[in-house]
Each structure stands twice: as structure tokens, then as C-alpha cells.
Length: 429
Image 1: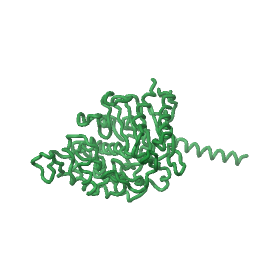
Image 2 (image 1 turned 30 degrees about the vertical axis):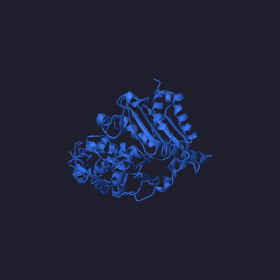
Image 3 (image 1 turned 90 degrees about the vertical axis):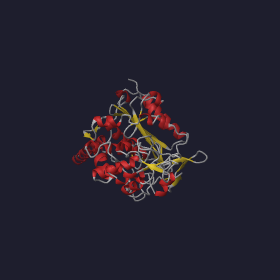
């Protein structure tokens, strides 16, 4: 009897140790009604996710909605790996692709706050190869030599953060072949050199427009990752791990997955020629001049850490990151940024350069409801990823949301465009 009681006390002691740890690693969970949300309306998100699975658009998805710092909705539907019979769950790891950009932008702004650079500083101050950039010339430009002209101004850190540098991606027909021939990579495949080497090569290739004169979604955030390395004196992946992921307890966010976590990585599926969902192969596939693969989180040398697209994460991990932003740069007593810096990042910095929506220092911004065309708030900001992941942050409603799936191409899937609207339509206070 005494021994049995002793065993129970030992078990209880262990549980009392583990429970606070588990709670600390995730945001607190509450009933939707306690934070002004309707359970019935949030369940519509589940219905839409399940509909996508039933219709063969997605293998599965995980979604989270939190308000006032508390999780009111966390659901998983479908399969993480259909062939192995593994269901989607909150611990599923996803390739977040361009959702890496917000994390890299925060890392850069942490160094900005430390006085390591000013936003107006030329990138060449940290990557000298960007000191003599050229720009593709228009057909009638008499000053052109070999199809290029000199840049009118230097590329600045602000240009990198706002995607107004003149850089682009491999899918851009103007320079895609040039990028591919030069061996420039992008994070969705493990075939690159060290970040320093790749960025030096990129600097020698022509821009598609003059710096600061247009908005072009681009490899700018990869360049920003190299700036983080130079100004911090740390490898980029190490900086993120020590300065962002460990402080925020984002334990499942990284460029490379250890062998122990590969089984948690969601498989990527895509519609075949008949519209049927098929698993994408591990082998690299071509998308014009842009080659991609699904195995980069666990294969290859991982010499190239892409700040614009290389990270993997989970829905709860990413929710902690964006809750930090919603809180004005702080979470659970850990402060990464000041409130004013977060507000600077969440302001529109591109104006008419991007007529579709505003863009801040790392994410898209809602300038008007007419422009948004969906249920949201003015000032909400968001971004998504290549493999079909998305997030939003709404300061006005004190709400965040994350939704992740893994499909390419997206085909008939509309979940990403519906998710934020459905979450906002659940507000009842």
C-alpha cells in the first residue's frame, strides 16, 4: 500500500513538472465565447477544410485562431501522409516557404534596433558586390551597354524589406534563365552554395527595374539573411535559433529537420493531369527556370539557408511568433522588438508601387476594405507560402490565425483565401 502510494506520488510529481512545460510551449486555450468568438462560426473553418479534403483538393490541413492572446480554435483534418496512414495533427511539421520572410524581417529589425544598420544604408556596406549593380535596359534606352544600364541609386536595406530592390525570382521570364545559368537558388531545393557565395553571385546579375521604382516580389529577403549574418557575426541559421526560436520556444522551427522529426513532416501532394491528388516525388521537378523539391528539409548539404523560403514550422510554433508581433514585440516576458518597431513594420511602405495591397517591412498590409475584398480589418497584415500555408495578424481585433497544408500547385483549393474571412466572421462581440 505504501509502495503504491509512493509510486503515485512520483508519477504526480512528474506530471506537475510536465504540465506547466507543455502549457508554456503553446498559447493558452479557452472557449471561443470567452474571447468574443462563436464556436458555431469557427466550425465553418473545419467544414471548409474537410470539404477541401473530400473534394480531393488537399490531403489535409491544420488551422488555429487566437484572440486576446488565447487559442479559441485549433483543428486538424485529413492526412499528414496518406501512404503511411498518418493523420494531420497540431504537431505536424510544414514547409512554410515564404512565411520565412516575416521571421527574417524580424531578425533584421532586431539588429536595426541594436544600431547595427539604418534602413537607408546601402546593401553594399555589408555585401560589397552590390556596389556596382546593373539594371535591364528598356529597348529604346540609348545609354544601354550589353542590354543593361547603371543603377540610378544604391539598393538599401529598406528596399530589401519592401521588395523594391529590383531583384526578382526565377519564374520571372526577364531574368529566369540568367538566374538558373548562374546557379542562383531560392530555398525550395538544396542545391546552393553558402549564403555569402550565392548573394555575391546574385549581385552581379541585372535587376529588373531601378531600385525603389517598383514592387517586385523577390529574393530580397535571402539577401537580407546575409545582411543578418554580416551585422550579427553569426551564421544566419544560428542567429534565428538563438535569438528568435529558442527565446520564443519555437522548438519545431528550423531550416533542417533532425532525423527524429522527419516522420512528422507533411507529405506534399498535387493534382495530376486528371485532377487527382498525387504525392509529389522526392526528385527535383522543374517549374520553368525554377527547380523545386520537397525533400530539402532533410536532404542535401544545407549550406544555403534561405531567409525568403527555407524554413519549416508547425501551426502552434508559428502562432507563437505572430502572437509576439500582435503583442507589440513581446511574448511570455520575452521581448524581441519594441512596439514602435512592430508598428513601423506593419505600416504600408510601398504606396502606389503596389496597387493590389500595401506592403510593410516583411508582409502584406490591408489599406482599405475595398482593396481587401474580404472580411478583415484595415491594418491587418499577412503573408503565405509556396506550399499552401498562410497567416494573418489583426491588431484591431486582437486576433491571429495560421492555416497550413502542403499542396503544389494549388489547383482548385480556395482555403487560404477563405480562412481569414471565416475567422473574422466568427467575431460576435
